Length: 350
Length: 181
Image (cartoon, rainbow over all chains, first blue to last red; front, side, top):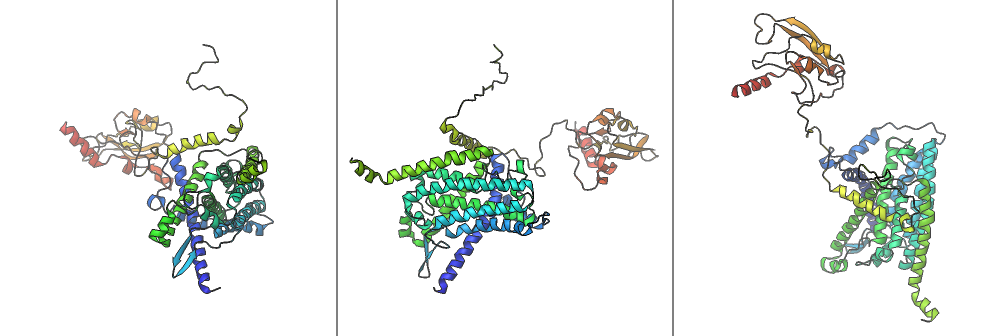
């Protein structure tokens, strides 16, 4: 392996890291702004022009807060909780194809930190580790509200991961690959997967809300009942890490939704742009298009937050186990029948 | 009209407890309706009033910070009779009376005036009874049109004559207006 590839990958990893952080940072501002707009208010607008420096002010405030540790026998676990939440939230972005490729310095640069062929499995695996951050933090807080939040988060994640996995299986049967890069490439033009797998998209969307702990599935936090749930005892930047991880998760969920179902970096006329305007410009547009899709989904997450009240716990479990899982199994069967329609017709002699 | 059908607001709606169908139990239709309602609010006019820059329009009889009035010649109206302090339900007003000396006729209208006049704004409930009790038209809550500003020290809320008496230029402007009429 030559040294250029190390430099190339380092640059991409750094860029992806920085972008994820900035997106998560400004999601906090966007959340407050969207909340305000949907409630006929203006929202934060004092720090910087239109409130643009608000995330920095919030970060500064969190840093300057007292670092409080409750009297818990698990001091180490108390520290590990937010660390796990944060690192898993950032790890997922490694497999996402941000664009097709750049052609620079006489070589093709793939716009992806790593192109592993089991990217989708990696994503589901890392996301499910994320619940450990919440569980460990809630457990180590030595507080009944935190523990309740952690228990709820754990059972919710486990329940919704089943439906999420099953909804992806239907997609996999169609695409035939686990590599996000190939899934993106297959959706060139306007043949986005959402048109072929609308039910799968819907189930995945609901599960993404649950995985990112967003309203209406924010049972783990629910300020009104559990005083913040798993992060009740956290303060200062440890608290900031949890909040940041939540927004990073939302960003990653939006990215995966865009890549899996909304064509990723593809836009209509991309092949024409590659021929006429060159690979680089076409892919810059592609990256911008992907980010537009991501921002759209992030807005949708926030929009839903201010529309639907939180589910009751039994309703949550009912929706997960008795509606979404049967629906996704039906979806798998329908997909199978459609894929094998030639063989089935031949078998029955039509 | 029977008791079951009476609806004063016209919005009476019977709640039915029927079993939901499968489609209703998915909540998708109602969630979509809710999303439409919330997105409409995104484009509504915002109701926020950005306070220090914008001030909410107040009623003409809004009772704000007190003002001790001067007449057209710029003389203080107050004669330190103490009726305002007597009528004050919160006991927020204190004053010290003093006799007018020769040569001060242009400062004070009556022979007696208040050398110290203090209102504790933390005690005041802005009821306006002092204004009603005043026989000399000296104290008013409706003319200043300002809110009592916030502060960090309790002592800062005891307003003396320096902050209560009407500014001289305002009295001059009033006099000019009166002459013009």
